Image (cartoon, rainbow, N blue to C red; front, side):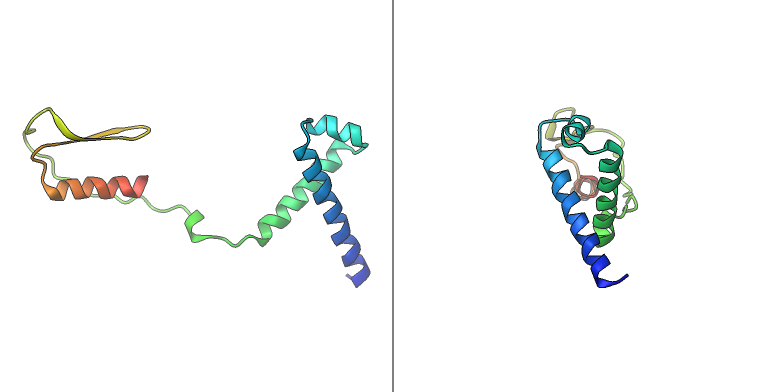
Length: 119
């Protein structure tokens, strides 16, 4: 691709970037905005897709975004519970953990470690 074609392509991309930003910052729907600006809605979405694909291609893949395998910890269960009154209660969005008086430190550490890995 020659230099002039590259410059034209880059200018066109910048124009579409500005148009898309203008559309998204308006309080109008995409359909209404396109009609008001004389732009075919399919053309708008095609250029939006192209810009998103270009952006995704330039973003580095982070190791944090990759799925991590689940880590399981073996927890020894006591044969009888010391008391029903929990001394520490941790409320999560989908669970509640109650730690009773007399629970050994190793069990508490294992529970906290498991919570840390899922939260």
